[in-house]
Amino acid sequence: EILKENPGTQALFFSIEMTKKNLYKRFISLKAKKLDKFCTQEERDQAAIELKLTNLNVYDAKDDPNCANIDFIRMTSLLESKKMPVSAILIDYLSIVRINVTAERDDLRISEAMRLIVELAVQLNCLIIVAVHANRNPQNRNPFDRAPTQYDESSSQASFKSSSYWFGLDKPERHNPNDKRLRDIFVIRATKVRNENSFYINTYFQNGTFSDVYMPYDPSKFMNESNNYTA
Image 1: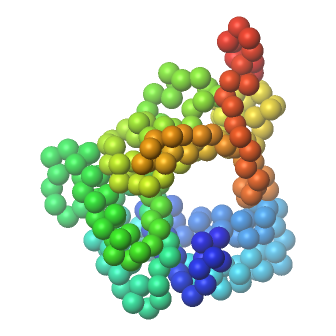
Image 2: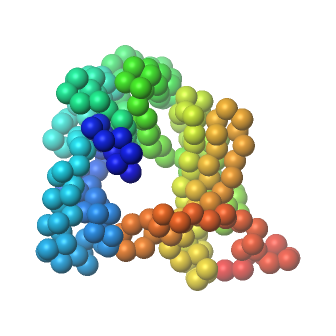
């Protein structure tokens, strides 16, 4: 969507954990709007052609062993920006990004990585999306309200403090598999960092893609009057 709104630009995807092969299967599902296993060969081919015509460059740790290194991310982004303007960079995920100096603690390593990522975003004037694992002690919260908060990042607060927006994503059905009302719902907890005001919305994931319809989400409506879970 970012590339559609910014023609003549490219996006860079640094996939430190997942291989290009698996990512492309997901991308094809998004293009075809159905899971890869349900696509016909014609649908796969058409989706693959559309994907190839998209200015998206994917780097993974299998093909590029240095993909997890922040200097590789920075230098690759800077070099690519000389060929074509970069409108978006995605880094998946922050906890395994390496730096070239020794850090006494893991949170200091991540803080330094985020400092360099922010510097890159300013230098290229582009959006950088950083994925993080943020699932510390979710069992202590209402199972209908486990979309991560900005304070749930297990290793540091660096990504939250360095960002303009924080989005915590959760699938309540994982915690309440018998509640039919939660079928295919994903909850997004959004926070604007400047004022830390948060709100919840939800969308549905069906046929290999997220719905582009977003609705308000109220965790309390899934509980009865006696505060017992209604699953």
